[in-house]
Length: 524
Image (cartoon, rainbow, N blue to C red; front, side, top):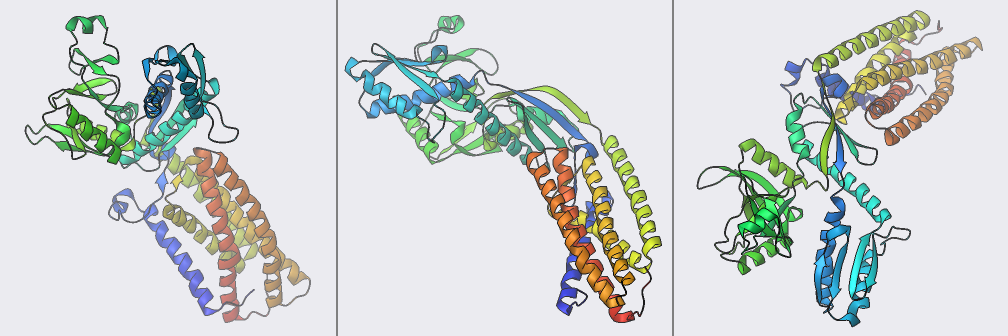
């Protein structure tokens, strides 16, 4: 146990040196740390750095209508491919219904939809029920299918929010679901939540639809659009009738960037469609030259330009009353994907950085006092071996910071508690080793034999205890969220580093001292 080859000494020293160097940027004052932006640093959580806390609630009332509209396109395609003529297709009253012109094909049409409604996996839920009334086919959503759709929409919403916030360059946001229709968003370091709310709250449902021609102002005022059309408000005032079916939607946008119009220099958003969207957009503009089409964002018509010529490049410009900031936010929203549900803020809190600074100061004071008292006790109890244990303890603290910085981990107030706890665990390991060595000396073993046997026997107990603690920390990280995860991260990293410093680094220090001093007796 006390024999270390040169390559082992070199390897252990290198690991320790790397860990210490990684810890240095996190210990520097902020003005000095900013001069080395390439160096990894420990991120501070919301409770330490301050920031914004939002509780969002989703409005899932429109989810059924969205699913019915998506099903409508699928039904039209299936009926056309199977040469089944249909009429009076409607998605009103939370159901999809249509007439089959040839009554003999009614059952065939219903069977085609039933095949779509079947679960794709064994034990899956059925999304739709299909029934017939004469030659009319009626499709209604099931409760299980609606519940699954809500769950899927909330998970998609959480992922979209994550992409949007990270596009701002914000580090380590906490975005978790709460209950069935709520999402908690915590962003450290962001003191003004208005930009965050405007970015998150936008559904970013972009659609390109043809404008319905021949609609009178009287029909617009009365809210009576022609069959297959809908009336939408226009940005700046007024209403316009557009076809219900979209040419292209935001789901087919591959990229979006803020730009400036070459003619008047106004901020615009340039979007690039994916291959399928580009083909559909090109085909629609080829077939409708001379007709206006509407650019719609969240059910508001931004503009309705006339198609002067076919647009074949797979790109388009979205114009509106944009500033550079709002155009950039729209581009971020489109790149990150649209929210499947509308989100509203039901709770908002802003945590000031002064509170976090106070928490850090008090946490550091507690850590420093606790570590100093522990190190004093260790030195007073074990003498020279206490010095080795204290050196390993200091190295353990630096390694925890270094590896947290390397893994881009976030330190929270519970994380500081985990930090202090790992210091106690590291001290406990050194106490077990030194007490074991004492026992071996009392039994009459020689110094070298007592040290070697004591370390060997104590290491087994230390590893067993650390493995069980690491399992508990891993379970907390997997099942927990927010502060619990912060505590678990520090705890697990601390367990690994404390075992390394107590069993390996301290043993190497003792081995080098024994090799040089060759003591005949040992007082512990």
